[in-house]
Image (cartoon, rainbow, N blue to C red; front, side, top):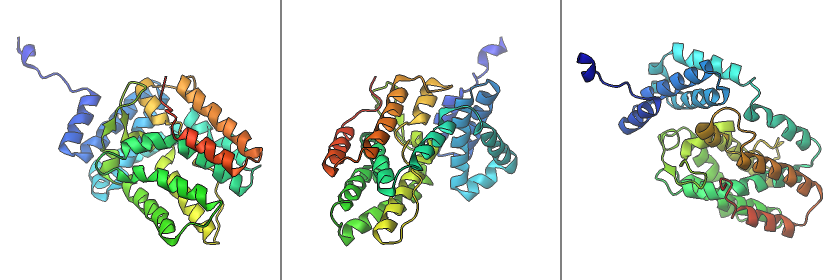
Length: 291
């Protein structure tokens, strides 16, 4: 009879929602960690890496959170992520073929290839950028346009400073609760798109590094760009979160992979800037989540 009065244990999703409501980031990190461990034990390596990486992002953003989460959790989480980074997942394996192609391209070609990928991310970034605290994401399109312009005509000091300011804002945003405890927007794939879905494959950091590298090039202090931003529109965290497991056969993922390699051939063909700009404008209208 007393079983009737027992409180039903909260599901992982309910725990996450409760932590977000209370701004309990210690509990949030632990909840993601427990979800990652459970997924790993169930053999779902994709979701295990997703949740454990989210835990790592949350507790790494703030020293006080990291301290209270405790070394037992943070060290085990790090060890597990290290193991999962060897798993045969798309997020682990996409870098090698991209790097192989990058090694045969000149720096301007690599940058154009990266810009084409970023153009496909712009629609999602604009939607997420409308959320409170996420405004920097809505500035990526302007940065993209200025970088394209800079290949043909000089940008002004104010425009240079605008891109530099976005780089700094992206760095701050990646450690903010607006990112790891941010909101969500509607998505044509069905499940809402979360700000935190940008956590995978170091998307924000790679975009920041790309813009910083380009500014250094414009300032005659070039650094090598390895093309880390090229897979930025794959959105693996979104697909892993809603589907789980390996995401390679998801139609939208297959379509994005095809676009990545088609873009590679496009830049290798030596297109005109008119052709590059036209492709970028088309991509800025593309819904990468559409069925």
